Image (cartoon, rainbow, N blue to C red; front, side, top):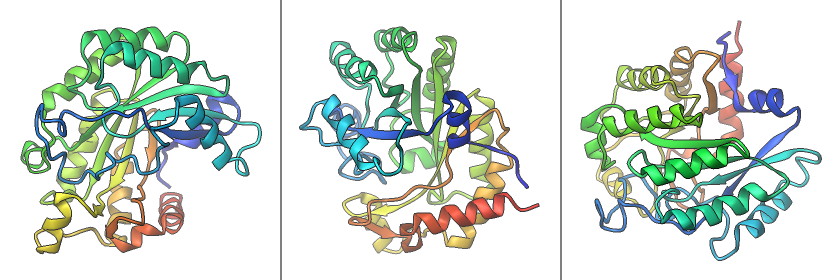
Length: 293
């Protein structure tokens, strides 16, 4: 058995009830899309900025939260919720706009955590000050899209910032008492198992409070999809992924919460791997393997 701490177990131990994440869309963009650094986005990122499951940006934050609660009404009766700003780069806006959105989410009585997905290079001092202030009201989590520590891969996927930016962001957030959750993509083109394990170990040693292990998806409308169709990119097979996750989880100590063991691309735009569309099957197999004695 590989000992690890899942997000569900952490949340139940912390809040004493089921806590469900509601994905929100604050209408943001990204410096990799608006021309500041690039206008094409990361090579794997969908047109929706990885926010296909997020709320409708035409609605207010409170309305999105209420919609999200209704969607999981049968699953969660007396629980609480995480307000998760998911689509694009969710600290990439004037601080007054960020305050307006974050405070609306945090004021909702059923929200117990504010979770914000962003890039390490989009956390200026005034935004860090705001996050520190809000963290005194309710816990604030910052989810950093690192994906890999290897510069050759980072350049290929057009990440647009150096590893030192991640180091700085993680350090400054931790100094302010804000939890850091780091995203890592498994199966990036050209990376070996050892490359991926090096990234996971680096994240653990960076002091991150949590980690997300994300399977690489090939999604329609991305430059990666074109590479895949040309035969330049391969995706992981089901059994390969299971073994890879096992090796990665073995490197993660129980004090680092595992927020995700895989991920599911929107089936309407998912090209590969096809097996990943059955997320329940993947998760069941992963848990079975991790719990083997």
